[in-house]
Image 1: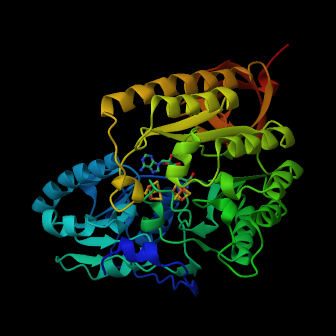
Image 2: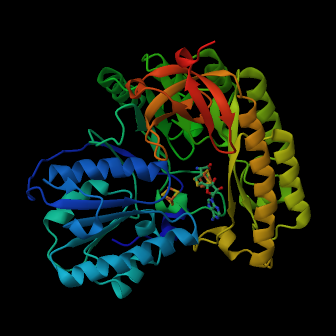
Length: 470
Ligand code: SAH
Ligand code: SF4
Ligand code: F3S
C-alpha cells in the first residue's frame, strides 16, 4: 500500500492496537553477509538495532564492506533534502553490485520510504531495489526478504496504529541503551515531515517500558535514553496512562545508574517534569530543548505553540531548579519569510541562553508540509550567511560552556576507546559533555572521576582522577 500524507494528516484520532510480535527464527541464510546503513536521528539508529536482530534471525552476519553483502539494507531519513540525495547516491553503488550478482537483495526502509512520491520514484527509476518497507512495518522485513523473488516488493503502510511488544534488538552498546517510549509525533510543526513519515503519536504502555529497563539493569547496562520525537507528551494518547514525569520517576527507581531522554518540546514541558529531574540524582541534568526560532512571528508560522518569552521563562525555570543543567537546542534559519529582524531575534535568544550546544539548519522545504507552500523569496546565499552568523555565535558559547569545566572534576561514564586516539578512552559527563581521557581501558563501562585538562569547542580532554599525582 502506498502512503497518502493528506489522508494521514486529516485523521484526528487513531486507535492504537497493542500486539505481541512473534520473533521467528528462520535460518534461511547460512552465515551470508548483510550490510546495513543508517541515516538520520536516534530513532533510526534504534530501529536499525531492531533490523539487525531480525536479519541475524535469518542467519545473516553483519559486514561493513558493501561489496561482501548478500542483503543490503538502507535505513533512510527524510528530514531535509540532502538526506535524500545521500541515499539515491548510495543506490548507484548498489546498482553495480546487482549487475554483477542479481541474487543480491537491496532493501530500502526508514522515513524516506514513507514519503509521498518516493515510492513511485523508486518504482520508476530504481527497478533493481527489491524491497521497500516503511517505519511502521519493520517487523515485515524478514518475510519480505524470505519471499524476495527478483521483482519489487513494496509494503509501506500509510495507516499506522500498531505498537508491537516483544520486539528484539541487537544493541550497539552493552553500556548505554535506547528505549522507545513512544512512536510518531502529533505536533505537526509546519516545516516537519516526521508526523507523516512516522505517523501520529503512539505511546508504549509504561508497564512494558519499565520491564525493558529492569531487564537492561539486570544485563548490566549503566544508562538508558528514553526515546521519542516529543517525549514529554508521553501518554497523552493513551487513556489512563501516567505522565512523562511519572514515567521518568519510575525509570529512575529501577536503579539504573543514568537516565536520559530525547527530545523535549517546550510546549509539553511541565513543572512536574522539572521537579522530577531535580529530585533524582540518576536523572541526568541534560536537556535538549529545540528553540527553532527566536522570532514570535516565525514561531507562529512554524506552529511551535510558544513565544520567545515562554521559551525563555521555561529555560530559566530549568536552569534555576536543576543543578548544573546543560541545555542544547535546534535552530532553523531561512524559514519562509524570515527577515534580518527575525534572525536578530534568534541571535538575541542565543546571546541570552548561551546554549551548551546547538544543531543549526537551513530550512529545507519538504513536499506535503504546509511550510513548503509558503512564499519564500530569500536567496540561498543569504540563508547561508545567516547560518554562518548563527554558527559563529553558537560555537562561541559552546566553547565558553566547555571552558567552565577546566580543572574541575566530573563524573564520566566511559563508553569505549577513542576513535581518534586508540590510547585514549571516551565517555560522557552527566551534563552530556564528551570527554577524551588518558586512562586505563579497564574503566570502560564504569562511572569514574575525571579531571578536565583541556576544553575544545565540541569536547573536553581529561585524566582519570587517581592518576593525577600531586
Ligand atoms: N522531535 C524533534 C525534532 C526532530 S527533527 C523536536 O521537535 O525537537 C530534528 C531537527 O531537524 C528539528 O528540531 C529541526 O530543527 C530540524 N528540522 C526539521 N525539519 C526541518 C526542515 N524541513 N528544514 C530544516 N530543518 C528541519
Ligand atoms: Fe517535527 Fe515538530 Fe514533531 Fe519535532 S515536534 S518531530 S519538529 S513535528
Ligand atoms: Fe530523519 Fe525520520 Fe529521524 S525523517 S530525523 S530518521 S524521524
